[in-house]
Every structure is written in structure tokens, then in C-alpha cells.
Image: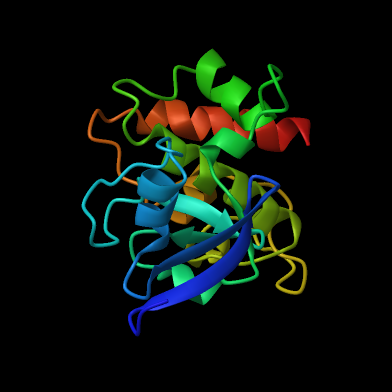
Length: 178
């Protein structure tokens, strides 16, 4: 091991990995280049577009801004880990049903963020849009996930094709079914 190298152990999509890497390696580059998980996209490589969004220990992160050494011991889930075999995750199925993608480049980040939005809402996390609609119990968060709330929570994910209305409809459907 060289002075610039570090050993990282983490689980990615429930598979354990122990990898020696340069301390400057981003999580995105680890996923794409070392583990061949190319579903996560490198869009802007500056944390502005959301295409690289993945989950680390159940929370969404921008993998292009996250050093791989900082997630040593963590559990990472990428878009490849969402489905259960051939059974799509409900969010993935809703995106298909609502045509929530066009070119598909942003889709992995959109899907990962959508799952996070649903989880954040379910646990009562507030957003800037929480206070725009009907009064809510601040201790528990908004009772329902409005379209404004979805748009606010998904704001960090850019779709070059403009499929936003379809993405919001897909997330709203899954939220209503939950």
C-alpha cells in the first residue's frame, strides 16, 4: 500500500467489497470504474445535477462529491440494487408507468432521490415547501406529499429532457399507495 492508498471496506447493493484505492477516489469513480456499476451517472461532476445520487446508509448523497474513504464501513445502494431480481421497485415501476424518463441519463439519480423523498416524508422530515400548503403538524411533518413538496424535495435532480411532470406524478402515485 502506498502513502496515497487506503483500504476501504463497504457493502454495495448487499455485496461486501474490500478495496485498496487512492484516497482522492470519489464514490462515483469507485462504483463506475472499480466495481463496474455504471448505472450511476457522471453528469456534471460538480454536485449540481443529481445524476450521481446514491444511498449511503439509507441517506442520499452525491457520489461525485463523496470521497470513497469517507464511506468506509458503510452500506451503499445504487440503482442496480433497487429491484428485487426481475421485480421492479415500486418507484421504478411508477417511473415506467408514468414515462418518468426520456433519454434516461438522469433516471438513476432521479430514482434514488425519489426513494429518499418517500422515506424522508414518511419519517416526518420537513422541507421548504412544507409550509406553503395547508397547515401541518410541525412535529410530524405534512400528512400528504403534495406535488409542490415533491418538486421541492427533488430540486437537486435535473432532467435535461424536462420530464418533471411525469416524475412528480410517479412519485405521487407511490406515495399515495404507501
